[in-house]
Length: 145
Length: 145
DNA sequence: ACGAAATAGTTGCTATGCATACTAAAAGGA
DNA sequence: TCCTTTTAGTATGCATAGCAACTATTTCGT
Image 1 (cartoon, each protein chain N blue to C red):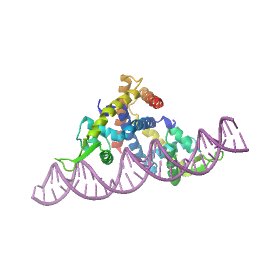
Image 2 (image 1 turned 180 degrees about the vertical axis):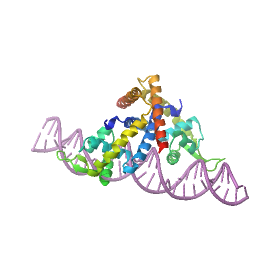
Image 3 (image 1 turned 45 degrees about the horizontal axis):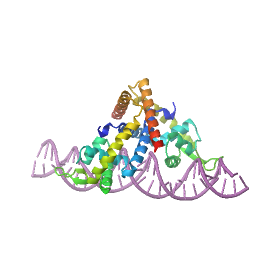
Image 4 (image 1 turned 90 degrees about the horizontal axis):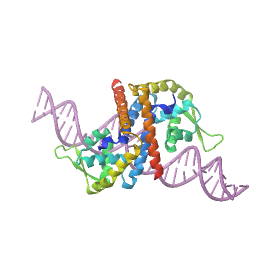
């Protein structure tokens, strides 16, 4: 078995390629791929807390905090201490952030279409299911340790 | 379409999960996931140049250089200026690096088996093919720009 | 053979991912 | 109510990913 044949390596390389391309696509909007993910979630539902976003994206709260600060610097969101829970930081999309949505969101969907070109719905579904299995297997391996 | 449903996001999250687990697995060997990739390639063929490794792993030469320096610090490889091409840096596995192979390589294969548990050979093959299609689609999108 | 172009590597910068350690606030139990 | 535990967020440090700019070397065209 060659190094390049491990499935984790193939997934890793595909991911790198995708991330690299997305980064390039977003450059004109002054958004990084991960910052864009946060914006996408906020466009769906404004006012989410950093913690909520971290859970949804399965990311470390540390990173979300940093990205949120960046997004505030770029004036795409406002960070407001929660009214009910003073610890929580809610993120609200600004007018500028709202304008981004008009161009970025369609571009994301076009990109997704380009990536899945010549891949049937069944094949895509199979991919999702296999990835889910891998996720499950890794989680179980973790639990056993 | 929800944010979490983009296929690139699913791939990204699976990759993160895999990388995180591999990192944990390698901790006892004082190897990081990417450093391990370099070692795996060197175990297959010693004396590769940094450039060769970068091409094979489809990574930036910058990172390979930095990881190679780390690996030299840890005394797993020696870095030697190429004889024919003075610009090239060849990496050679040390005795210590060779000893690692005995334990790391089997562990990698066990890990791969755990990750692909309950996934048939056909399903795995389908996954590889779909990932290859995605890679191709991204490359083509890049070329068009 | 000489100058231009390509190539291998290095350094610096930014963004991410994750671990650890910390603060402040909220929740829960005796 | 008081005290412990949990939770949201922040700060810091290391490993990674990739871009840009740079040096040194090699190759190629004429």
